[in-house]
Image (cartoon, rainbow over all chains, first blue to last red; front, side):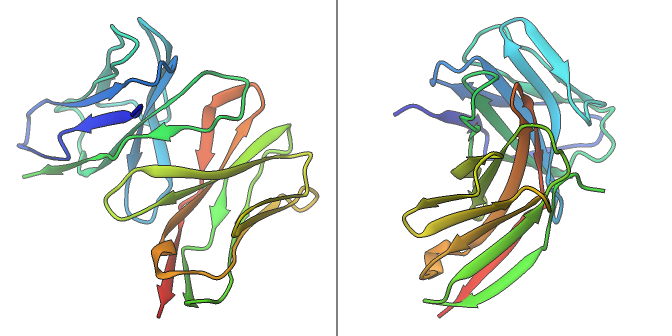
Length: 114
Length: 112
Protein backbone atom coordinates (compact mmCIF):
# COMPACT_ATOMS: atom_id res chain seq x y z
CA UNK A 1 0.00 0.00 0.00
CA UNK A 2 1.18 3.50 -0.79
CA UNK A 3 1.68 5.97 1.99
CA UNK A 4 4.01 8.05 4.10
CA UNK A 5 6.14 6.56 6.84
CA UNK A 6 7.52 8.66 9.65
CA UNK A 7 10.05 7.34 12.14
CA UNK A 8 10.57 7.11 14.98
CA UNK A 9 7.12 7.50 16.54
CA UNK A 10 8.65 8.87 19.76
CA UNK A 11 11.97 10.67 20.09
CA UNK A 12 13.73 12.15 23.09
CA UNK A 13 16.35 14.86 22.73
CA UNK A 14 18.82 16.13 25.24
CA UNK A 15 19.59 19.81 25.50
CA UNK A 16 22.09 20.92 22.84
CA UNK A 17 21.61 17.84 20.68
CA UNK A 18 20.62 17.65 17.02
CA UNK A 19 18.08 15.01 16.05
CA UNK A 20 16.78 13.90 12.66
CA UNK A 21 13.21 12.85 11.92
CA UNK A 22 12.67 10.54 8.98
CA UNK A 23 9.92 10.85 6.35
CA UNK A 24 9.61 8.45 3.41
CA UNK A 25 6.80 8.25 0.83
CA UNK A 26 6.08 5.73 -1.93
CA UNK A 27 3.25 7.70 -3.53
CA UNK A 28 5.45 9.20 -6.27
CA UNK A 29 4.45 12.64 -5.00
CA UNK A 30 6.53 15.62 -6.08
CA UNK A 31 5.85 17.88 -3.09
CA UNK A 32 6.64 17.16 0.56
CA UNK A 33 6.05 19.21 3.70
CA UNK A 34 6.98 19.35 7.39
CA UNK A 35 4.54 20.74 9.95
CA UNK A 36 4.77 21.30 13.66
CA UNK A 37 1.68 20.78 15.84
CA UNK A 38 1.36 22.21 19.35
CA UNK A 39 -1.67 21.63 21.61
CA UNK A 40 -4.58 23.94 20.82
CA UNK A 41 -2.86 25.34 17.75
CA UNK A 42 -3.16 24.66 14.07
CA UNK A 43 -0.38 23.15 12.03
CA UNK A 44 2.52 25.46 11.29
CA UNK A 45 4.65 24.95 8.20
CA UNK A 46 8.38 24.44 8.81
CA UNK A 47 9.74 23.60 5.34
CA UNK A 48 8.42 22.34 2.04
CA UNK A 49 9.92 20.92 -1.13
CA UNK A 50 8.33 20.89 -4.58
CA UNK A 51 11.11 18.97 -6.31
CA UNK A 52 14.29 17.04 -5.61
CA UNK A 53 17.24 19.17 -4.50
CA UNK A 54 15.03 22.17 -3.82
CA UNK A 55 13.21 23.28 -0.68
CA UNK A 56 11.71 26.45 0.77
CA UNK A 57 11.32 27.84 4.27
CA UNK A 58 7.89 27.93 5.81
CA UNK A 59 6.62 30.12 8.63
CA UNK A 60 8.79 28.70 11.42
CA UNK A 61 12.01 27.44 9.77
CA UNK A 62 14.43 28.83 12.36
CA UNK A 63 16.26 26.05 14.20
CA UNK A 64 15.34 23.42 11.61
CA UNK A 65 17.02 22.09 8.47
CA UNK A 66 15.96 19.70 5.69
CA UNK A 67 17.31 17.95 2.62
CA UNK A 68 15.66 16.47 -0.47
CA UNK A 69 18.22 14.28 -2.16
CA UNK A 70 15.64 11.70 -3.28
CA UNK A 71 12.03 12.13 -4.34
CA UNK A 72 10.91 9.63 -1.71
CA UNK A 73 12.70 11.12 1.28
CA UNK A 74 12.48 14.45 3.14
CA UNK A 75 14.26 14.23 6.52
CA UNK A 76 13.96 17.03 9.07
CA UNK A 77 16.79 17.91 11.47
CA UNK A 78 15.89 19.71 14.66
CA UNK A 79 19.04 21.57 15.65
CA UNK A 80 20.19 22.82 19.02
CA UNK A 81 19.24 26.32 17.84
CA UNK A 82 15.55 25.38 18.14
CA UNK A 83 14.81 26.55 21.68
CA UNK A 84 11.44 24.90 22.17
CA UNK A 85 11.42 21.73 20.08
CA UNK A 86 8.95 19.67 22.13
CA UNK A 87 6.02 19.12 19.76
CA UNK A 88 4.31 16.69 17.42
CA UNK A 89 5.89 16.75 13.94
CA UNK A 90 3.92 15.80 10.85
CA UNK A 91 5.23 15.09 7.38
CA UNK A 92 2.93 15.33 4.37
CA UNK A 93 3.07 15.00 0.61
CA UNK A 94 1.00 15.99 -2.42
CA UNK A 95 1.20 15.32 -6.15
CA UNK A 96 1.96 18.98 -6.85
CA UNK A 97 0.42 22.39 -7.17
CA UNK A 98 -2.71 23.50 -9.01
CA UNK A 99 -5.00 20.63 -8.15
CA UNK A 100 -7.18 20.00 -5.10
CA UNK A 101 -5.68 16.71 -4.03
CA UNK A 102 -5.12 17.77 -0.48
CA UNK A 103 -2.20 16.37 1.43
CA UNK A 104 -1.42 12.83 2.56
CA UNK A 105 0.00 12.82 6.08
CA UNK A 106 2.28 10.48 7.95
CA UNK A 107 1.43 9.29 11.46
CA UNK A 108 3.76 11.78 13.12
CA UNK A 109 6.78 11.87 15.43
CA UNK A 110 6.44 13.13 18.98
CA UNK A 111 9.65 14.86 20.04
CA UNK A 112 10.34 15.56 23.70
CA UNK A 113 13.29 17.42 25.20
CA UNK A 114 14.63 15.75 28.34
CA UNK B 1 -4.13 35.33 14.87
CA UNK B 2 -5.15 32.37 12.77
CA UNK B 3 -6.11 32.90 9.13
CA UNK B 4 -8.59 30.09 9.57
CA UNK B 5 -10.69 30.07 12.75
CA UNK B 6 -12.58 27.27 14.43
CA UNK B 7 -14.14 26.76 17.82
CA UNK B 8 -11.99 24.39 19.88
CA UNK B 9 -14.54 21.98 21.35
CA UNK B 10 -17.85 20.31 20.45
CA UNK B 11 -19.70 17.63 22.37
CA UNK B 12 -22.68 15.67 21.02
CA UNK B 13 -24.69 12.55 21.85
CA UNK B 14 -24.30 9.42 19.77
CA UNK B 15 -26.86 9.43 16.96
CA UNK B 16 -27.20 13.21 16.87
CA UNK B 17 -25.83 15.40 14.09
CA UNK B 18 -22.59 17.32 14.61
CA UNK B 19 -21.91 20.65 12.96
CA UNK B 20 -18.35 21.95 12.98
CA UNK B 21 -17.88 25.53 11.83
CA UNK B 22 -14.94 27.38 10.30
CA UNK B 23 -14.28 30.88 8.99
CA UNK B 24 -11.53 31.65 6.52
CA UNK B 25 -10.00 34.87 5.27
CA UNK B 26 -8.84 34.56 1.66
CA UNK B 27 -11.44 35.66 -0.86
CA UNK B 28 -9.35 34.49 -3.85
CA UNK B 29 -10.20 31.31 -5.67
CA UNK B 30 -9.74 28.74 -2.98
CA UNK B 31 -10.07 25.10 -2.14
CA UNK B 32 -11.30 24.35 1.35
CA UNK B 33 -10.66 21.07 3.13
CA UNK B 34 -11.75 19.10 6.14
CA UNK B 35 -9.27 16.75 7.80
CA UNK B 36 -9.76 14.35 10.71
CA UNK B 37 -7.06 13.55 13.27
CA UNK B 38 -7.43 10.65 15.68
CA UNK B 39 -5.29 10.56 18.86
CA UNK B 40 -1.58 10.19 18.19
CA UNK B 41 -2.07 9.97 14.43
CA UNK B 42 -1.64 12.08 11.34
CA UNK B 43 -4.38 13.96 9.52
CA UNK B 44 -6.75 12.15 7.19
CA UNK B 45 -8.39 14.05 4.34
CA UNK B 46 -12.18 13.74 4.64
CA UNK B 47 -13.43 15.98 1.87
CA UNK B 48 -12.80 19.21 0.01
CA UNK B 49 -14.86 21.85 -1.78
CA UNK B 50 -14.05 24.50 -4.34
CA UNK B 51 -15.16 28.01 -3.51
CA UNK B 52 -17.61 28.20 -6.42
CA UNK B 53 -19.68 25.41 -4.86
CA UNK B 54 -22.33 25.82 -2.16
CA UNK B 55 -22.60 22.27 -0.94
CA UNK B 56 -21.02 18.86 -1.20
CA UNK B 57 -22.38 15.65 0.25
CA UNK B 58 -20.52 12.39 0.77
CA UNK B 59 -22.40 9.70 2.72
CA UNK B 60 -22.76 11.02 6.30
CA UNK B 61 -20.75 14.16 5.59
CA UNK B 62 -22.21 17.41 4.26
CA UNK B 63 -20.06 20.46 3.59
CA UNK B 64 -21.76 23.85 3.31
CA UNK B 65 -19.98 26.94 2.03
CA UNK B 66 -21.18 30.52 2.43
CA UNK B 67 -18.69 32.41 0.31
CA UNK B 68 -20.15 35.82 1.13
CA UNK B 69 -19.51 35.27 4.85
CA UNK B 70 -16.40 33.10 4.28
CA UNK B 71 -18.00 30.44 6.42
CA UNK B 72 -17.54 26.70 6.00
CA UNK B 73 -19.26 23.98 7.95
CA UNK B 74 -19.01 20.20 8.20
CA UNK B 75 -22.12 18.30 9.22
CA UNK B 76 -21.77 14.70 10.36
CA UNK B 77 -25.09 12.86 10.37
CA UNK B 78 -25.80 10.07 12.89
CA UNK B 79 -22.58 10.77 14.78
CA UNK B 80 -20.87 7.68 16.19
CA UNK B 81 -18.30 7.27 18.97
CA UNK B 82 -15.73 6.51 16.25
CA UNK B 83 -16.20 10.03 14.97
CA UNK B 84 -14.55 11.39 18.14
CA UNK B 85 -11.43 13.17 16.89
CA UNK B 86 -10.02 16.59 16.07
CA UNK B 87 -11.35 18.10 12.85
CA UNK B 88 -9.26 20.64 10.97
CA UNK B 89 -10.48 23.14 8.42
CA UNK B 90 -7.87 24.25 5.85
CA UNK B 91 -7.70 26.51 2.81
CA UNK B 92 -5.36 26.92 -0.18
CA UNK B 93 -5.21 29.18 -3.18
CA UNK B 94 -5.99 27.52 -6.51
CA UNK B 95 -2.47 27.54 -7.88
CA UNK B 96 -0.54 27.54 -4.65
CA UNK B 97 -1.33 24.52 -2.58
CA UNK B 98 2.09 24.84 -1.02
CA UNK B 99 0.42 27.36 1.26
CA UNK B 100 -2.26 25.33 3.01
CA UNK B 101 -3.53 27.22 6.07
CA UNK B 102 -5.00 25.19 8.90
CA UNK B 103 -7.33 26.17 11.68
CA UNK B 104 -6.53 25.19 15.27
CA UNK B 105 -8.86 22.19 15.06
CA UNK B 106 -12.19 21.35 16.74
CA UNK B 107 -12.14 18.49 19.21
CA UNK B 108 -15.37 16.51 18.76
CA UNK B 109 -16.43 14.33 21.67
CA UNK B 110 -19.26 11.88 21.09
CA UNK B 111 -20.99 10.65 24.24
CA UNK B 112 -22.81 7.29 24.29
